[in-house]
Amino acid sequence: MRGVLLALLCAASPAFAALLDFTPEERARIAAHGPWPPPRVVDAGNRVDGMPAAVALGRVLFFDRRLSASGELACASCHDPKQGFQDGRRFARHGRNTPGLLDAAERRWFGWDGAKDSLWAASLAPLLAADEIAATPAALRALFERDAALGRRYRALFGAPVADETLAVNVAKALAAYQATLRSRRTAFDDFRDALLRGDSAAASRYPAAAQRGLKLFLGAGRCFLCHAGPAFTNGEFADIGRPFFTAGGADPGRWGGLQALQASPFSRLGAYSDAGAGDARATSTRHVVMEPRHFGEFKVPGLRGLAATAPYFHDGSAATVEDVVRHYSELDESRLHADGERILRALRLSPAQVADLAAFLRSLSAAPAVRPRRRPLARRRPRGSSRSPRPRDRRCGSVRCRTAATGWSG
Image (cartoon, rainbow, N blue to C red; front, top):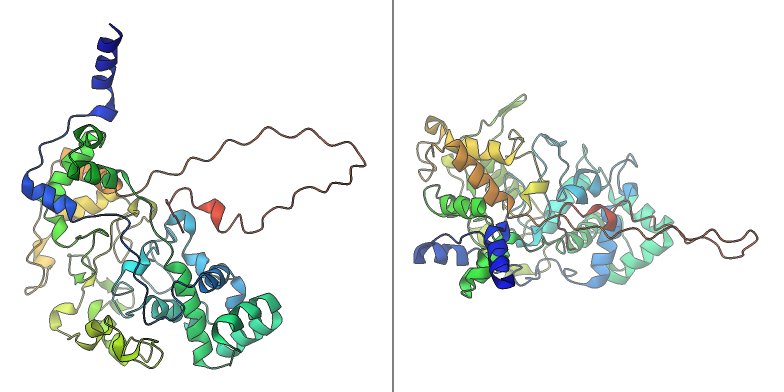
């Protein structure tokens, strides 16, 4: 009798939902979205990438408002750990939605327009931008001279700080070394994928039925996997998806403008500031980019991991929810697409139930919020006159480790 009751309970539990029938082709496509996390690839263009001392310096600088000319902004002001290292606003200071930083080390191009081809160059841009951090080499050197501990960390990596562009580049490389450690955690999808591949139907059945149905849409009729490919769920390229690119200041050229900026920049992988020189395999992409008319109005295909924490969505932040994103593709106005552009895309015409299923799958690509440990009961008050001082509060708690439960951040 006990065994019968247990079987009935298991059958009724949502943890043991029925496993849908995935075809061999669908299983191959599911396999292509992993494993996670992938092996870490060190950036040859940044000689301090992967060095613990550089990561430690970059972490401190990332949260340090003293970098900014105003003393009010840090990198974390727009890249909040609680929101996937994004800011939750529709527009950032540069007029586009702020990209999150989780899994940034996996990217090939940086920014919605791909104007930067390395994480350190992408970190340098806001560091020097007049409307963002607005740091100068002279101010950075003064900071390292004023803060002896910070100065020692810098000199151990780069030598004595000299007030020229190299100093700003070195700071950006330390920031990039830290950001390269920001990796999203494994998700329900990853557990499902791995269980499916090893033939563990019981474990795979724990994946919610709605997410399974949404996954079938993602792999099949929606053809989402063609652009959102691989373990990070992005092909790393750019696309016209029918979003408006006109702004209050005119038209946002997207990838077209990004390519112009990339080719003119002294801070690309082809420039003197790259530590890899001619041996940088990633520089091949930069060397061979070609501007074409279709690039106007194209924007980065974002990775989908951790998206639950990074609303709003699209380059213009115009989609408030995951359902809004799905409805855009469901109701797509194909006449807005470039004539020579994304013929992959077509209006999906999804039912409300299908919108909900696809949204459920997309949310399964985010780790569940970490469970906070219970607070210990308050200690009994010590007798008056006790010489033991209270434990000091960790000043970093409010800005680094203790603000990450919602993102699944593992950095």
